[in-house]
Length: 179
Image 1 (cartoon, one colour):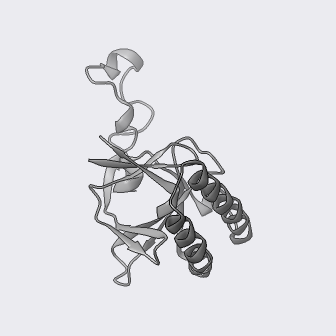
Image 2 (cartoon, helix red, strand yellow):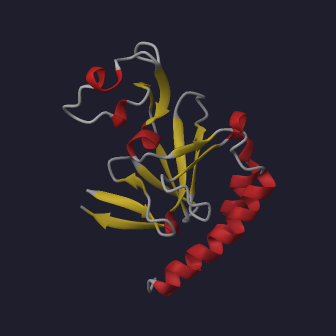
């Protein structure tokens, strides 16, 4: 299995269990699934007895559910929701991308990336940024669990069918880890 880590933050953001395709030589896209999940079910310790600890389910109602994307749930991504004022404005995101591109290029150089990979990134990144910014209002924006503001933002939109969500990530901003 291959896990993909953000080169800036070290957060795990993708794995090869997803069907990943390369777009414009610099972006990865992968279809996602949405499903209902119990609120807070990740944080229960196996074998714990919540009723003995806090008197049971007095504070959240019974089985409160929330809709999540599989990529968000599996990699503990944090959703920057517009309605909560967390999604960056288009101008703020554009500024973030400028800094992010420089950091990725620096990491590629630091890690000994090939001249072809660096040239591919330099050639493809401006067009990908333009494409992303043109569609920015449609994206849900997520960050890795470290909430590193300099790191990659995972973008989620829906395919033309209006039903299938897909995530967009920067190919050169990821490091493959074989597990």
